[in-house]
Image 1 (spheres, rainbow, N blue to C red):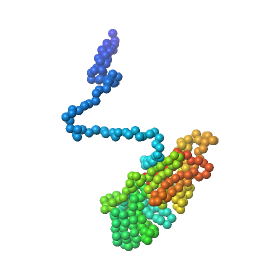
Image 2: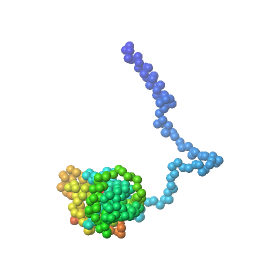
Image 3: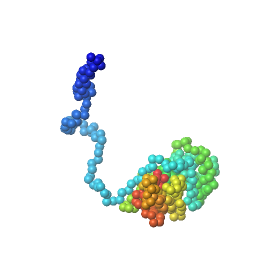
Image 4: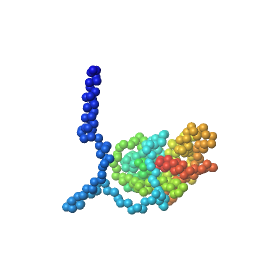
Length: 322
């Protein structure tokens, strides 16, 4: 008999033995345990327990049954913050903004980090500090007033240099050079109590029926200047998104924008002579509402702009301010 064949009975016996162990032995297969499972009574604690020491591990608030699939009132949703910046939108530590005759600087650091450097600039380059109000971010110097505030974009600061309410270009240029040389990463502690925008005043995307807009807790001037800066960086891709015109007087922009649905069509749209794959001309307008503003998108010309397309464009633009 072949020697290899002598091991076959032993192998079969081992397989049978292991199969038996797989149910009740070391290799218990529990898949079948749930076939005949039955609910057990809930755990009860004795009446003598100290109720003050027993609390739910995962409390769940009771429902009032008032929720509905389609709410009667308009829904306001805060637009999500982009996970990554658009290509080519990396900015420096100090950048400038301008609306007509008004100018200021935007620093990529919060006010608590900028304030000590602003104090040193005032002492050494602006004739000394005559009056300091840290809680308001104001430094009065012999050459004018330095004012620090939160920028429109979170985590950044605005720095103004003014005299008699007018922006001082020479002061801002010297301050920009000074801050560029110093950079960030030092003097993180400060006596300045930064005033952050409250959660309920954050940039919000609002939709009421077919109307979509972005509500902003900033004046139209400030929001326009910030959007103008980032549109120049982001809307520079011909055939997909382009900045055509900027109008600071009316707080408006004209752009050419290809929606995401049309971009996804790709080659198929090029092969279809009836496909509507041209970028839309859109006018973005900031409407003043007291010390706040609202951004809307309107189609220019005969091409219509759907609700989803307006929402997509407004989400992209409002993302610059988050």
